[in-house]
Image (cartoon, rainbow, N blue to C red):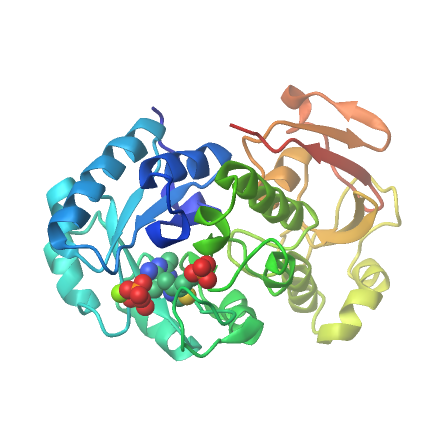
Length: 340
Ligand SMILES: Cc1ncc(COP(=O)(O)OP(=O)(O)O)c(N)n1
Ligand SMILES: Cc1ncsc1CCOP(=O)(O)O
Ligand SMILES: [Mg+2]
């Protein structure tokens, strides 16, 4: 089974046997993986060490079968014993430096954070990813203060390592979390407590993919449009924040770019292409992508099955790199969310 880069994960599923009485943990987690969960954590708060070890072994086998990374919550010894891909620790668990020493440089180490200060400390300390939450109050960790989407927004702006929003996230509020800038979602009860974990995961993935296709996230974690406006401000010599969004067309032209329909995109004074405007699935967006291939990559959709139409013409996959984008281009992008 080919493994993708774990950093590309979008949907993080965590075990919680209390939410699925009568169904086995392995069956529920297999359904979650089949539905699109692409990283899995064993989190078991009430079981004995022996039971956790047994579950960890079984989950290791399952996740290996599907090429999905396995993270063990809290128990570093069990992570080592079963050859997990990594471990997750909270603010009061084993210190990060100690965990790294014990797990080695290649292990994936995740740290829970509840404020930007903690996030930046984890980043400096060498965490591989962080949890951002609990975004909403949740029965899975009762009594914890919700950090709200305000912290999600801060994370989107400042955190440069992979980060995942967690806590009280369900299909009814996930769009709000994505709109705040999250590009990865973690859910416990909403997934393992649902009648069909596979369908629920498919729905989560569809929402996450839709947010990406709508032009929100970039690989660097900054909001796509906001980042483009900031870059425009830099390259055009200081267009101010919010006003820049509306004024970009004229400001960019002043920087030497042709009108809508020009073949060449803007080149700024440093020789870098500047942002220009296109219509993506009916929405006006700013991009610096020079070709369809770059546009798809900038949306984080590489490798996805999709049909791309540029200015009314369907572009075959092998022509994406050659299909140049220019100011005023009209792009329709339909990608298919894989099931099973
Ligand atoms: C992905 C992810 N984020 C946060 C947590 C919570 O970890 P922690 O704060 O240590 O709390 P417990 O899960 O141990 O109760 C997590 N497990 N995973
Ligand atoms: C483990 C953990 N850490 C922060 S919130 C949380 C629980 C998330 O569970 P749920 O998705 O059911 O709210
Ligand atoms: Mg913990």
